[in-house]
Image 1 (tube, one colour):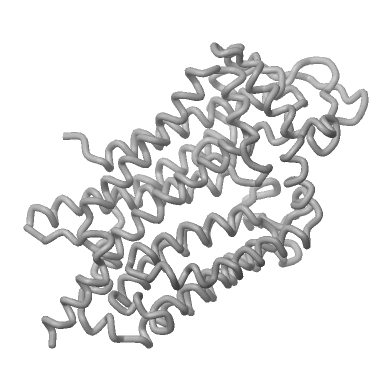
Image 2 (cartoon, one colour; image 1 turned 90 degrees about the vertical axis):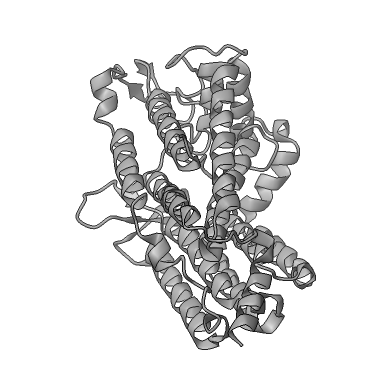
Length: 422
């Protein structure tokens, strides 16, 4: 019988395969002169795309590592290590344990994020410090610490909410420490990457609400959060330019609006059926970031509506499988982590598709498992591997007759456990 974990594994394999093929297709050049983004008169020598050439690219290597790591995480004993968090009534009253674990997790996340500013280790691309060089693996190989923090914070907040249990309904005892932790990590990321910072904040806040935190506590901080976003936009002129350009990209189609206009041209060039794999025009030096953030535009141009629909369908299927695991999971901590991982991938995909189709301002948010990026592929696959492990081991718990714990009643179940212990 096919379970949700099997569906996730198949979706990851399919999305990564599409990613490898399209990243290589977008990287094709033509013999002659480079496009308008390259210096005038720059010669280009095209290399043919053969099966051998594709198999020995960095994208294929990243896909292989991602699949291996997903398989390894599928057998990781996450239920033994995290699944019991909050199951003991004493855990929910152990404030020192919860706050110490939260503080250590935040400290480690900030330490990893700070690596981008270390001389000789951090890399600056397009004016942003988001990457670090991987020591011992040569030049050109890099990683994004924000990806590590993104998935690490989900696991940390899920564990914290499970441990605190019914105390999450209290602002000072449960919610406030978590908000401080999220704000510290997301705020550090926003310095260089507003989109990822908002993505982490959104996913973690959903976990807090699902664990029993009161909605009106969040509403009190909406003005503060909006003020922070506005300040981050105003402080960085390029962010403000992206917003004004989004309102009318054709006002300066060869300047600030160039990126968005070229993305729309790529989508329109598909003409429904697509121009064919490798026959796209916009990837020949016209569309910036065609292998990363705007790869979906190349998919639309070369594979047309069928290719775009296939990608969207795979993401919908992946999210459905993730929510199915959330629905049937018994452990509060694992239920929350599965929810956070599913929401993160879903929201990230929606943001990327909105940016590519110019429904939202340009953001540096990649399409999960599709856009080129070794760190993103590997860590996303690892996180989904943990969902597979949750689903695989959850069936054993179901056979043992463990009672289900509804997601929105985690705090109530914790309170009942405390009463039983008393």
